[in-house]
Image (cartoon, rainbow, N blue to C red; front, side, top):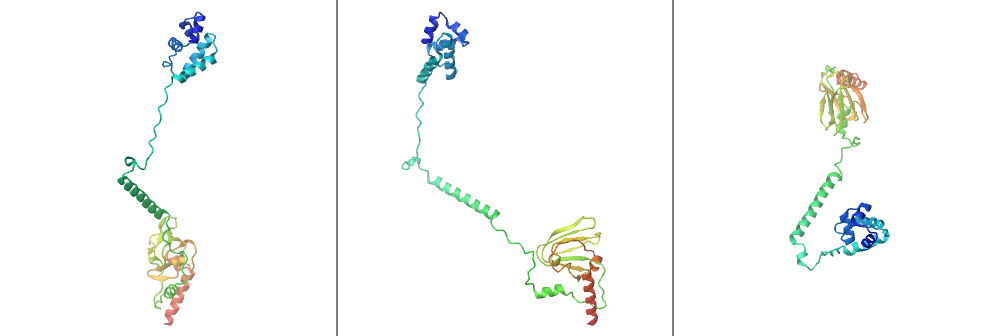
Length: 263
């Protein structure tokens, strides 16, 4: 009513106010009628009212406050929220026995799966065999490894023949390769497992960390091991000729021949 009275006092029409404020005519007429339902929103209603007030010489701040009051009074009150609280004594809101059992089974399944996961990933693993040879070695085995079987005096050690390596303990890592670096075999030998060096391998060699746990035979006859203690050996020639030419093998062959001659 204040906006309309100021407009009439200036002799203006609603169309002229619309041109001055650049607000559509229907919004100007809605402001004068107090009909805010056609407004795009609350901020637009207040903005249109302030532009209208400035166009007719009224205080736009007071007009904006009046529009806010009218908007506040015309806004519908929000419906009260209904809170559905759980009541222990209400049978309709108490979970059924079936739901309780299902929840219990679900918790049990989760616990069982957690136990399986823990045992699979965090439980102590099976102990691996020691890489250090036990000092309590059987006297019979030590005598067998230290003293080769005697040969007849007339039999000479063969210079060539199948070269076989046999693991004396569990998990002995070995790598066999030729002179060009081509791998022939690489694995962890089980106790008693053997590997025969191919006859056609050119310059076969061995890499291992347990030469003391590898028994060697050439053409079925045992020769001394590569070492008597645990240590890393790499690029060791393992053809029959090279093994026979090792000082330990030559000394063992001479001792064996002298023993056989005495007997």
